Length: 198
Image (cartoon, rainbow, N blue to C red):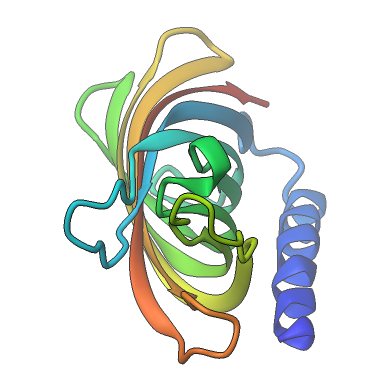
């Protein structure tokens, strides 16, 4: 797992720098953006148990455009878990670092639709619901590699600035007990962002 995560990190750091060095004449070829919104980890919820709430999410995204349509992107996404009083909510905190491609379809000179796909190194920290007066088992951390997909709409309102609405999905593994088998969970985010285009 460490080798895979190191490989993804190497791609994220190396490819944009190499591409930028080889094509210095491309205008506005690099962009960096931040996003704030909501996130949800789809858990298998027990009946009448506070579970899998919609939490706050934020993302940082950087990309390099090869042409008007295609870009290479790296991103980091975080979903903060609302674990409630004494861990009363069955909830999971998510962190994901991804690399992939983005394909833009222009609707006008300043508005476009973006399709994204790639691979993500994901980490879920699960807080099982705790019965009152029972011992809190603490968080259970599970790491995995999964695909991600995204859909966005962007508006470039100035030469170097653009705003966007984005929805992203990925799959991550989790354990509901330290020794239990892994189970899959869908993770989704929805947010608004702003980007600076170099």
